[in-house]
Image (cartoon, rainbow, N blue to C red):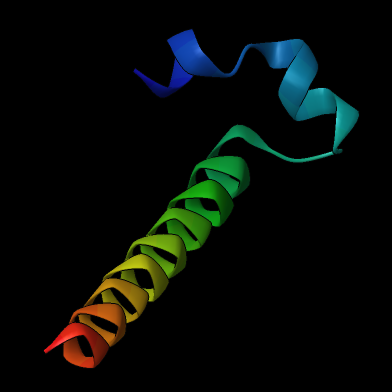
Length: 48
């Protein structure tokens, strides 16, 4: 799936190896998901 979403040109523009790019984008995705969950939980607490 990663190969379909991010072609070789996209990875080469950032000077990343394929495995490094997968780890980097995976880590950013996890951080984004945690931040999104935290903000959603925080906004629900204010509504009550």
